[in-house]
Length: 281
Image 1 (cartoon, one colour):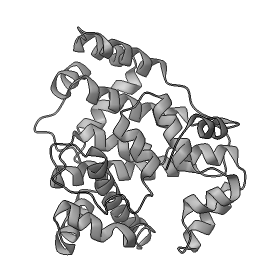
Image 2 (tube, one colour; image 1 turned 90 degrees about the vertical axis):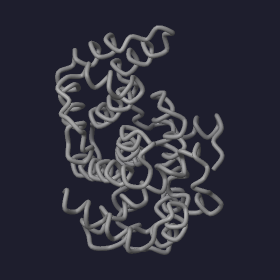
Image 3 (cartoon, rainbow, N blue to C red; image 1 turned 45 degrees about the vertical axis):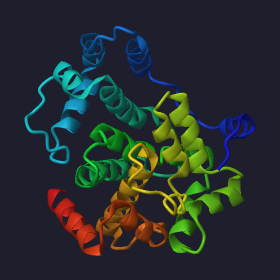
């Protein structure tokens, strides 16, 4: 998919695009300093009680499986690094920032996104422990962030979602394009980039329904973070969908073989991950 300024201008017209939260802006400015002080960033986060509590709750969850409990934000910043804490802040703020009248339940949407985020953290530790868990967590929460924006703009968007669930021969992205001349991946990409999120995450948001993404990819490409996150996301989505509705996701049939090849796993290993994850949940 090619994104240019003309596309962006079309996308943002009439959409609720949440502005970058002030706390995230402040942390990003502090992080850009040559002498970035983790203590300053920790103080910035700790000034918001709800934010700091949410970060500690996430890090101490069974999905992260930390060797020891993290008791304060300063400890988290020192252990994880500034970039990881920034991602956790963004993950918390995106859920808060999407409010307003919509034709879908935001609570159900974000709960489902949180389940996928937790699943990505759990699976990521299995398949590639070099990827920071916070990167996977924010990817799970942000990958569909354009969807609530679509639901806030278009009153009939819930009907498009229903059609997508009933007709597996056509993708949600195509249905959106046919109805609105844009889609949730492009809207989500704009939100992610406007918040100054990492390039790989922004590209994942844009390309997470691109079923051919792994056709020529190799797991030996250690720097190919996009492909790694895509593979983990698709597994997490499918496991979550099976747990919730007892069916595979629409994308799974098209990406399964490429994912197994990319990760060097087979069906039995996938099933083992699914069983282990369901036990944690």
